[in-house]
Image 1: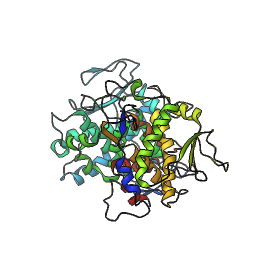
Image 2 (image 1 turned 30 degrees about the vertical axis):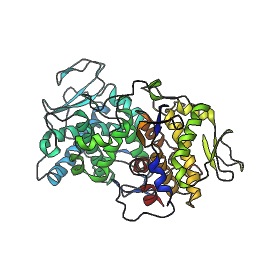
Image 3 (image 1 turned 90 degrees about the horizontal axis):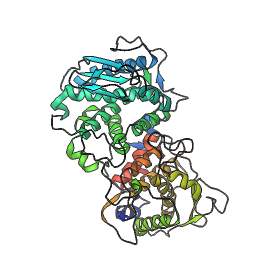
Length: 482
């Protein structure tokens, strides 16, 4: 977060003045959001639908140049066999009868082993997977990239990466039907490829794949976490050649494809992306790459921004208390809790400070004591603050609708102003902060998307979507989640 600009939160207050009644006729955001479904599919977990290859999968009739018959190559080829079947079905159905043609080359390499020359690039040390339009090929690093992804996020992460690269092949084959020309910026191509990957995963989630299955709870959470892992570093300019997007942007692309299918992906263009992309350079006077320490002074600033955000709702602002996150009645959620009996938000500053520490590039946020970043900690506090607002207008606090509403209102609070602030309200989120919110919401015990008892909405997909709805249009927090 930045400490020199204000959070523009006037829109948040608008929804809360009449928060107890739904607003009729409000258009839905892309993809419906319900606590019990993911884009209309029932929420399942891995104990019901084990995410990964099916045991009864048919033999794969594909091979890769330079392959070594390893388990990584076998998984990649199985993913591509499924992708061929999917696009053979969907391309003519969605794009005026155009047929999908298999790629000309599939190439496996080991970035630690003997180097190859692929797409005018040497593979020595190239920890990557990529599509090359020069020879219509997809190549992947079986030595480092695929094993690392599988170790951290499971086997379906490899399917995610291959689905993204096949999305680039689809762009190339569709050409004008996907709006792609020589002048198209990288960020547009990457957003479309993430979207096409999401559309393919919907096909898997619908049970149409012969080789893979995915749960819509834990399974999709790990897929979205993969998108977080392969994001650009915070501070990257979206207009830069090679920009792929921050996690906030990449997850959006995937979710749109999952909810709305390939034709919607093809409509993504520069105009649309310019209006919503979060990837931007740090301001010249940003310090600490946008990360502030979690201390008393910055909590005071956070309190000011929250009070300002919700002042038109008429709520009596709750007080922030550092008491180890314990309510007077003994109940608590960690590291922050809302106590309705005395209208306070109680905090465990030590644990919040641990969350606020930014992870290193190769660390998975929120795992094994690794921090997430300042905005994740501030947003957890903000989520408990919104409980006071919801209580003041008579809304439930202890069900899944409350969890979605809380995520939505926290997203509304996070909406950023584009004008300098004042000394009275000095906080503004900085590039990469929304990624920290995504990381927190993909954790098992997300507080941003939890009810007063700390019970999170089951599906990370729905958590992120609810947060995004509030960030886009605060009025929908009431219309969708009352």
